[in-house]
Length: 155
Ligand SMILES: CC(C)(COP(=O)(O)OP(=O)(O)OC[C@H]1O[C@@H](n2cnc3c(N)ncnc32)[C@H](O)[C@@H]1OP(=O)(O)O)[C@@H](O)C(=O)NCCC(=O)NCCS
Image (tube, rainbow, N blue to C red):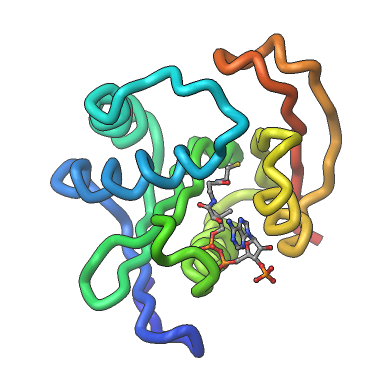
């Protein structure tokens, strides 16, 4: 799964339980970039969520730059549960590489939820061929924040 790209030596690999702390260290600051969200969880709760839920329920892939995890994607079947890049490494191609790699897995489609107010995230998914298929009023998620369902299908 590892390869280099024009963005520098980004390497992709599958994550395991030993990566929990490093994945959580990407997740917490990345989710806090979404300043329109209420702050519902502490950093410690984030770490437990990554360890006890995400790394158990999902296939997690990480992008490393010089041996440091800078981005991760958590997929549960066709559902992309989480995709986050550490704020210091946004825009270097790591998230795009992980999303394109997920399309190469044994899936016919990928779907995900994105907050409607996450303009950068929406631009990112749309640039990668995802189409908005549903909009909610936010009552379905714990943040009570309107979101949008995105879907990509293999051509
Ligand atoms: C969305 C996200 C995962 C993309 O990861 P990444 O490693 O920066 O992705 P890439 O470098 O491959 O692509 C960068 C693109 O992401 C988009 N983007 C999203 N948020 C951005 C931000 N805060 N700053 C700059 N670009 C952002 C832009 O479209 C950018 O493309 P551009 O340079 O042509 O404008 C990352 O910005 C992130 O973690 N954001 C905060 C958390 C989040 O929104 N996660 C998705 C929740 S559904």
